Length: 271
Ligand SMILES: NC(=O)c1ccc[n+]([C@@H]2O[C@H](COP(=O)([O-])OP(=O)(O)OC[C@H]3O[C@@H](n4cnc5c(N)ncnc54)[C@H](O)[C@@H]3O)[C@@H](O)[C@H]2O)c1
Image 1 (tube, rainbow, N blue to C red):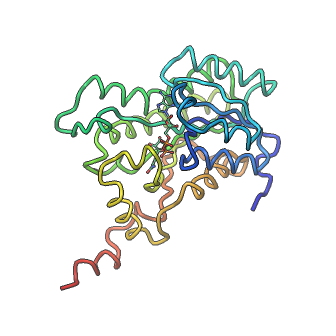
Image 2 (spheres, rainbow, N blue to C red):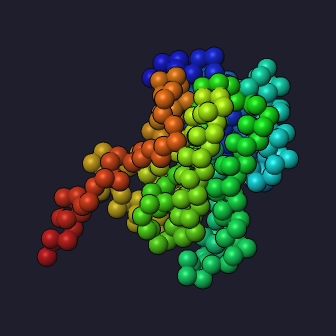
Image 3 (cartoon, protein in one colour):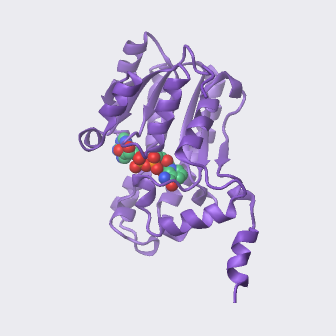
């Protein structure tokens, strides 16, 4: 159901690779809610993914930008300002990648060049994106910035590897920028800590199927899907969440606050 919650708003959405991407769902929902959009992704993802298909569906221009490159980010925000005739009202950071995970390097034997890349792509890029927008004054007053996180920032999930460190950094950047951007322009910054979701990035973590099913059993409401996440992002981009900032918001069907579920206990009580 659409409520026109984002009517008249303009936004930038990063990270839509294919129909499974969380960002893909967010873009479709924002479009349904009346927002004018600009899409962005890394140049390689533009060649390999399906973002142009999404762009047609939501009537958006796609601007290539490697989120670790300040130059690319400056071009992104400058072009978005041109396209939208001024600043945007919301930005989604939906970007994550770990070369250590990709190359099966365990946490106990990390490659440190890869490690720096993980932190740069998955966390520092959030800082870079926000700092670029801040310096170019590219986000309107009462704007909203959302990044996507995972509960491995708080608790150990061994196979999540160095992405756990990246998510902890992402959440810290969220608090710091929430303060600075809030003071200057009432722009809010939050992360959504999402359930395991079957996407290219998600499924790249070894054992993903197991912790997907485990989370499903532990969550009283079941895992939140990419579509559910899109609904929550719409709320955070809308004027209905104006005073929510600097938060890591669990969006996980209750998983984060359950110690053990009866469903899981049943598994261990079977003879
Ligand atoms: N899938 C899950 O289980 C899950 C759970 C919680 C949080 N998240 C987070 O959600 C976000 C989106 O991931 P997803 O699950 O939709 O997977 P996805 O693979 O569809 O999206 C990841 C995106 O990051 C982009 N990217 C990688 N390097 C980049 C760079 N240098 N510059 C710009 N973009 C770059 C990719 O092109 C891709 O579009 C990530 O931050 C991920 O960590 C995912």
